Length: 401
Image (tube, rainbow, N blue to C red; front, side):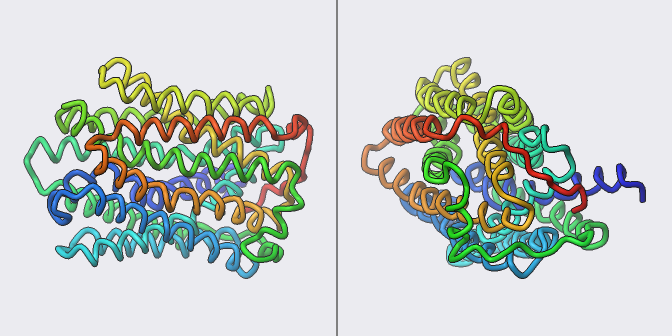
C-alpha cells in the first residue's frame, strides 16, 4: 500500500475509533438521558447525573491506566485496547434491563474512551507536517462530531416511530462499533513505533517538563468541568425548562455535532496562525457566551449557541493538544497528554453529579448553565497565562504511525 493511501486509511480508522469511544461510548448518554432516566431511574436527575459521573469517573481512571500502558504499548495498541472496552460497554447497554448493568456499561465505556482519546491525536498529528499541527490535532474531533450528529438524528428518528429509543440507539451504535473494531485489527498496524517513555505517576513527571504546564492543566480542567455540564444537560434543559419537544431538542444536540466536525479544524488552523494562547482564550469566552445563550430558550439564539458549543467543543482540545505536541517528543507525548487528561478527567468526573444535584435542588437547569459559563471564564484566564511563543516550537515528528 502506498504511503499516501496508508495515511488516509490510518486517519479513517482512528477517527472512526474516536467516534465509537467518545460519541457513542460517552456522549450518547446526553442524548438518551431523558429516556433512560424515565425508563430505569424513576425520573431522577440526580441518579442520571450520578450515572454520567460513573462514566466520566471511569474516564478518569482510564487516564491513569493509559499513562501506565503508554510505556508498554504503542499508540496503535492503545487504540485497539480502547475499542475492545468501548464495544463491550455498548453491548451491555444495548440489552440490559437493570440499572446496575447500565452503570457497569457506562463505566466500561468511560475506560475505553480515555484509552482511545490519548493516542488518537498523536497518531493524527503524525500524518501532517509540524507547521500544520493545529489542523492535525483538530482533525481528531471530526469522528466525534460525525458520531454526535448520527446519535442526535437517529434518536429523533426513533422517537418519531415511538420505539424504545435509548436501547435501540445503543444497539445500532454497537453494530457500527463491531465494524470499526474489525477494521482496526485487520488494517491498523504500528510501523516500528516504540512505546512511550515512563513519565512518573500518571505522566506528571513528563508533564512538568512542558512549558506553561500549570496554565495548560488549569485550562484543560476548566474545560472538562464546563463542557460536560453543557453536553450532558442541553437536551434535558430544553425539554424540561424551555418546553421544547424531544424532536426539537434532538435537533439542537445534532447542531452541536455538525459544528464539532468542523470546529477542531477551524480553531486548530487559526491557532497555527495567531498562536495557542490567544485562540484558546477566545474559545473559552465563546463557550461562556454560548452556555448563557442556551438558557434563553429562543430557537434562533439556542441554535447559534449550540453551533458555538460544537465549534469550541472540538476547538479547545485541538489547541491544547497542539501545545502538547509542540512541547513533547514522540516518546513523551503519551505520558504528557495522559497527565493533562488526568486533570481534565478529575474535573469532568465531579461535574455531572454536581449539575444533576443542582437541577434537582433548584427545579431547573438555569444555575447549572451559569456555572458552566463561570468555569469557562476561569479557563480563559488560565489560557491567557500560557506562553506566547508556543507556535515557534518545532518538533521533528515522524510520519510513520
